[in-house]
Amino acid sequence: MTETVKAETETGSGPRLHGNLGTLELFFSIMAYNAPLVVVIGVLPLMVSEGNGIGTPLVFITAGLILAAFSDGFVRMSKVLPRPGAFYSFITAGLGREVGLGAGFVMLGAYFCVAIGTIAFGGIVLGSLVTDTLHGPSEPWYVWAGVFWVVAAVMGYLRIDLSAKLTTILLFLELVVIAIYDFGVVGHGGGPSGLSAAPFSPHHLFDGSFSIGLLLASGMFGGFEVAVLFRDELRKPERSIPRATFGVILCAGVVYSVTAWAFINAVGIDKIMAAVTGDPTGTLDSSIQHFGGQFTYDAATVLVNTSAFAVLLTAHNVTARYAFNLSADGILPRRLSGVHANHGSPHVASITTTVVSGAVFIPVLITGTQPLAFYGATLGVAAIGALVVFFLSNAAVFRFMRKSGQSENFLHRILLPAVAAVGLGGSLYLGIVNFSILTGGSETLSNTLLVLIAAVFIGGVGMAAGYRRRRPDVYQRIGRQ
Image (cartoon, one colour):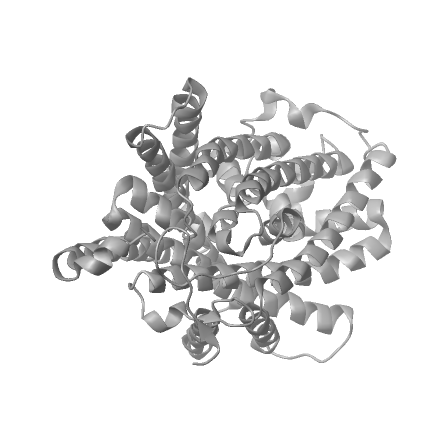
């Protein structure tokens, strides 16, 4: 194709993407993947009712500290090993090409699951907005899901800067709505019981189910590794990657913990559990209307749609870039590593992501699978897959830094990696034990999906072992080495 170009990477031969992202654009792109308004409206009431209860604000802080400890090594690794493959590259460098390729396939699958799951979720929320709020036509969910799919396909094909600008605008509006609600609660002095700092007390950290609370909270900080994956599309990666990574963890931790505190106080410390147990979503909706006003509530209804689209767009872009990196190494077909001459985007990988994600919905529609059930199952797979790769990446960074003789003090060499290992390992264990809660399905379905995740990882390990024997040239390139 004449519109496809090849370029040299800083660290070796192969195709290279290009763009002009700055720190703020990168930050907003990653933060948008967290979908703060979806978290506040859809997940926060569930965390209070099924998780930590009054201790929900503190569990967000706990999860943020665990991921910050992990990110310390992650960011330092990005400086020592300037590869655009993110976890795929880091795990390969630290734990070997077999484990690296297995992890690369798992992470590719995780982001792809987020993308297709969000398409289904988009069909639900957009249909509700058009039919129930705007009193427009009533169409099946897959019609509205198709709108999400098409727009993401167009934006994913174009230069990453355009996606970043769009997600920046959408995220800013989400944060404004959340801030209006938070300040509204504080300005009114809270609900019937006033304002209390009790939700931040360690005494409430283990209220309810700490395991489910930590599991859900950890999943709300996803996407920060995208900073390294977009490395070649940044103006100043050495500065932008650490700032955006820690900025996302800090912002998400503050927004989620403060809003959880505001919500609990808005209903009342002594009334919140009964309220969310009876009607979790309705309780938050009523609270937004009361403390933010009807306009804020209507804006939130609209922005849930744009928030979901921002998740889809980021997941689509990341999936395409993981496929691009695997293709550049010769693992996936070489054609997928084409770089658009004008947009600098992995346009072939993006088109392929669009086609495959559309094809997935053929059996979904044939079998009559409900979109919400599909959404829950795909996000459950993505959550476990991401935790597996996070845990492996933490071990890889620790081992690589020791082997390469990097000069580090006790904090960076031992303490923070140990905290991250315990936190991520615990979250992974809780995720596996409570996987049916994540998927919203039966034990049989949940066990089948867990086996599928393991099969993808083992398949990648086996493929790398095969390349080592039969195609040593490809084997040497695994992990963008």
